[in-house]
Image (cartoon, rainbow, N blue to C red; front, top):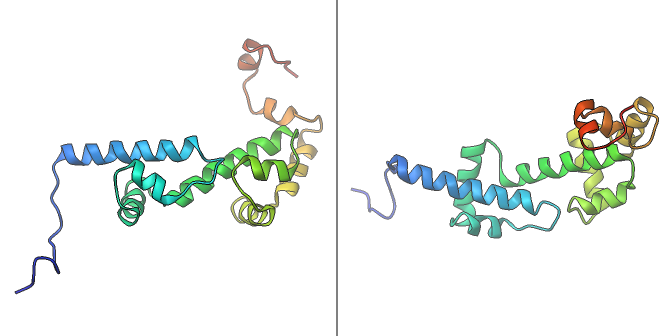
Length: 153
């Protein structure tokens, strides 16, 4: 016979509990997304979901298919690509704007996810879109640009 503290059967939770847990996880994911440019700790995101850090990490991965760290990194890299495409900021400024404190860590992570260093990525966009700042406008429909008063090329 096993002791109840050593072995616990899988919990069978009702749909209301799952819905509440999902809402808390979405709230914590929104918390991560809102502060992705700042140093965030797993403990803070777990507290937002009212879970322990270990349980939070496990349930987040099971629910969204990626860890909180992977989610945050993806957000940061998407924003970095957007900022690099605008061609108004240096790579170091982009690094700091997306929440990295080390240019080396940022560049290494960017290269592993995008396949190019941040400066190579920015240069490759300049070859395709030679006018500075034009890269972003090429990604937005012309009717939207006209509506907001931007020049359409």
